[in-house]
Length: 411
Ligand code: ASP
Ligand code: MG
Image (cartoon, rainbow, N blue to C red):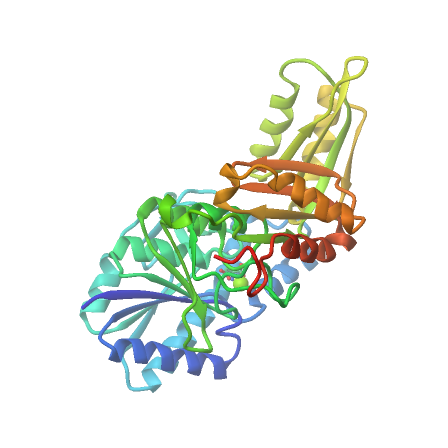
């Protein structure tokens, strides 16, 4: 029988009622003739609650123990779902990431999957079970429990789909697809029927919450087609897949994303000599902090300012590194500004259409929104603006490119 992998997010399994609803859907897929593997997130806000408890005790919990704690969330969801499916008279069994053969590297908190050994999952499928796998977790090469970073259940699901040669990976969530903008901020946003891996990766990295960017990277590498769809309604969602250039002809922009979870960090009066940037960013990288949008100014009197953006969640970590680095390289000081938002415009057609950046800056100017930093990739333009301007900026850019239903930018 063909295998289908379905992943259910935190909201979709947020209560026992919702778990029963998910059980119904899973049983339906089974009855439709699929072998079903389900990947679950922790119920509702469980992960945040567990994290908050650890932080009430100390701002710097041991990464190993934090992973032990956080993986408990998915264990609750997976076993309750198995109980719900069993109660429907359908066989089901749940497995932790470690039991499911998800082997990761040793980086606690953001481990990468290095291998999947699906033997046990396959045996369970053959025994007639719906297999439920805890998302977001694995076993490291040194036999420790690890987590895959926030939102990591998406990556678990894609990786299981790749390892099992599944027909598709369904990401079932509280939105019914990928939109041209977050519909909670821009109600006129339009659902995209298809989006390419490259565009989805840029959108996810730019703050679109619907998929963890690493899951898209993994899907592209292994050729897994992802269907992002509603857990509640049976309507077609968005396919994330390879899209050939011809299909993209005439399509310019796929969406706008807003990220309010990054801070702008500036190092003032950094000595302008070879090796300084390498020292700064090596130190940050060795703490596994992902940064973005690096901007270095023209130097005056042998010194320059260096800015970049980094996740606010890494603040404590980052400040400790920068305290040390500022002294080491002889910079004047560093500041961390968490009052910013990053707005990004993404579209594969940008490459061949000049003037996209100018149009975006124009739209921001017309709203009186000041741009503090700019960065680009071949298919993305990002601007840092004040946080209070973020949502207004997003709506202005969305309108400027005609992305609303029936707008001029429709695919
Ligand atoms: N429960 C984890 C989180 O909230 C993983 C996930 O939801 O995918 O980040
Ligand atoms: Mg979650």
